[in-house]
Length: 72
Image 1 (cartoon, helix red, strand yellow):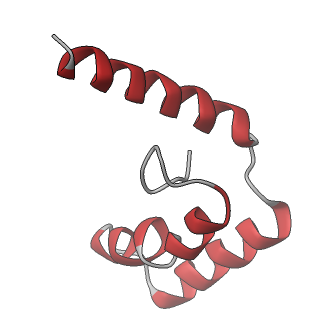
Image 2 (tube, helix red, strand yellow):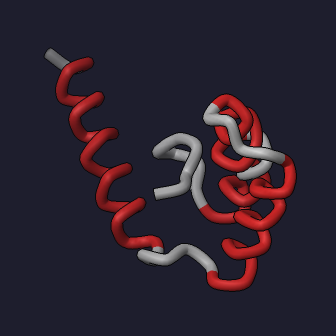
Image 3 (spheres, one colour):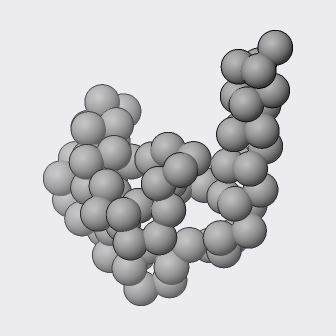
């Protein structure tokens, strides 16, 4: 699951990648610039390992839960 937020998908998610998972968060976790570059290259070559379906399902569940809580 690599999306930065449940309602940010597709090309917008790719634009956020250097800022999020392979940016601020990776540095916070102690990754070096070399490790970040290698990770980005791997994602660009192989793509999302589990495909878009798990991201979509999680996003749908999160948004449904938020709607349900907000409408109570």
